[in-house]
Structures are given as structure tokens and as C-alpha cells.
Length: 100
Image 1 (cartoon, rainbow, N blue to C red):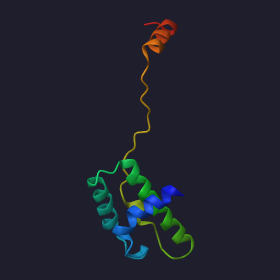
Image 2 (tube, helix red, strand yellow):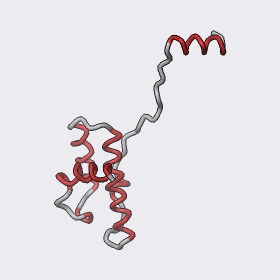
Image 3 (spheres, one colour):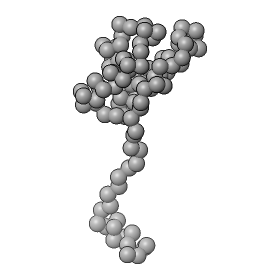
Image 4 (cartoon, helix red, strand yellow):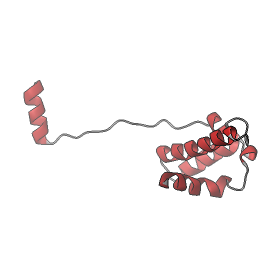
């Protein structure tokens, strides 16, 4: 729930005065770029847009919107890999087991 609150507090000042039907893809793209200029990470921006995308999905189910404009906005590519750093002991253990 906390993530949803954070996303709402980020989105509301920019788009909160508009109804879902009044928001254009340009507004969402502007929002994305503005958040990037504020120093927000791509992951954070993607989560905020995903929150908004979910709002559109629910509004469609309830008959309050037609379509999902967030699908027209570019989501940033996320790096999901983990960097692992071996200690000297683990490196020696690995080399002893697998060879140079």
C-alpha cells in the first residue's frame, strides 16, 4: 500500500486536477520527463506509470474510461541484474574448484 501512496503523491500535483478522460499521452510523456529531470530513477517512474496504468484498467472495468493511455507511453528499460563482488577468500575457493 505504501508504494501506491508514494505513486499517488507524485502523480497528483501534476495530473490530479484532470479526469482520466482529460489526460492525453502528451501529459503522461511530460510527466515522465519531468520526473526524470527531478532526478527520479527509471524504476520509480515506471512504478508510478504502472500505478496510473492500473487506475485506467480499473476505470475501464467500472465503465468510467475507454482505453488505457498509459500503454502509449514509453516505459524505461530496467536493469534487473545483480552485481556480485567476490571476497578474496571466495575467489580463491572458486578458482580452486573451477580452475583458472
